[in-house]
Length: 278
Image (cartoon, helix red, strand yellow):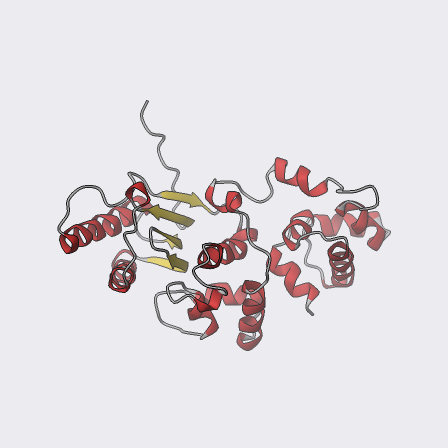
């Protein structure tokens, strides 16, 4: 049976994952990671795509990118083909360097883009290569913390989601990345989207007899069907802010995660974080 064709969208945002063949350590050395970074930057300029996040591990890499001029498969062919030639020549070897196929997951829901970026940046912490996200040299996290502009990473797009005030945006970004909660691998590597029915069912299921579900918490806060429905639909009306903050704080008190709280009222986890910290 032939492979299923990839679904690619012009202007789409993708989470790209590429692993070494047989999980080999093909980025172990500093010069190998440096070559990959420089090469991606070169092709970004030549092929016209934007990069929102990346991390280079020893045997794989993650990139969150937006395609503009060229389709994703052409971009990835150029990058992986050139790196393979470099790696084989450098090490006097032949054969496959990467797994046969990269994984390119279309980010269909902007609401989890920031959570995806946090997942990417958390990879070295999860692998116990460092204790904190900001301690790892080979990720895009430092570009955001240091406010490094006009470089390989488009920091403006992501920081503007947090706040139009740049100092406030960086502060919120750092707090969001440094949260102890670890993102679940299945959400970001198995092609699942936050908001699918099975995830919604899990969110709404009470975990104990005394724990209210999220809809019950929201209605207890609003005490009004019209306001309740507006919030559920993700309305951004200013008059709803006071209800949203109360709902978020009560939900957190019941030990719901920000991802769950946001999904229930059609806003991003980052938006939940911002509202709670106002």
